[in-house]
Length: 310
Ligand SMILES: Nc1ncnc2c1ncn2[C@@H]1O[C@H](COP(=O)(O)OP(=O)(O)OP(=O)(O)O)[C@@H](O)[C@H]1O
Ligand SMILES: [Mg+2]
Image (cartoon, rainbow, N blue to C red; front, side):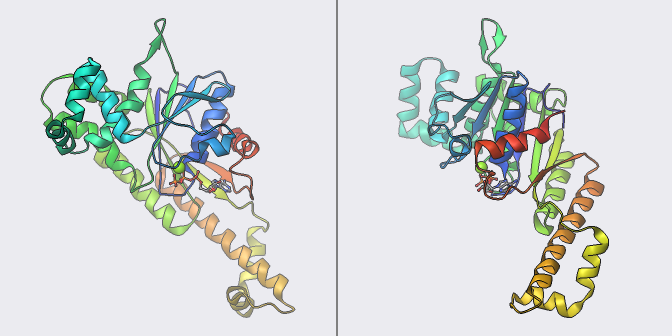
């Protein structure tokens, strides 16, 4: 997965598939190679700080690992801050945002709420210190509701409906950046199971056809390391009685074999879905192992980060 040369990467996938874990692993891998990475995340309950064992992360940008910084984007605050950036004068911005009529107006622009978050994350790509970019790459850990695809539609909505001005100018720059495969891309996180794999195939289809956004890569997360080879799996699953016992969870003298059959069934599902993703997506997959009990620790994140090294 080629990420090191990009400026903005959007990490998406269904709730709970491991977006934040993958974001942390990618950031750790790139940070170790000298890239300055900012993780921008949404959502009320951030888990990144517990994964990296840092103090809780709020809106202030804080250092969380070597060359890695993080910030939590709160939509309400982002609206206000963004308003201040757009309107320039803080006092005026406060009047505008605290006025219930204009507040209502801003809320009425479809997707403006989403744009405040995505736009704020994008804005960090434009920040400079002494003329050099403050961050080489912004990793956007998208919210878990839906696909996060709705959020990617927003700059386009703004281009379509908002009259020329600062808001529109930014949306235009962001839209251009998001469409440039040399500078940005979407990483889709999936699991080696039937439903998540199907949803990933749909999501990648929509990215290509509807949004025309560059796909930077697909991550298959939490793959159980196979214990059995294919012929062994077939042998274990060939015995119908054993398989029924495996499904029933009853324990008797065949319990060990039944457990093996259950595991073999699971491995077969995984293998089938990895093969399906490979053939349908036409893009290299990054496969991350299932880490028992330690994925959410700094050691686990470092272990996963190794899979993102070139
Ligand atoms: N490779 C893995 N092996 C084992 N456990 C994992 C792995 N990846 C993620 N997990 C665990 O799965 C849970 C969900 O992971 P994570 O918080 O990264 O998902 P998410 O997609 O960001 O969730 P949300 O949609 O709620 O933001 C966490 O407890 C995490 O430690
Ligand atoms: Mg998350």
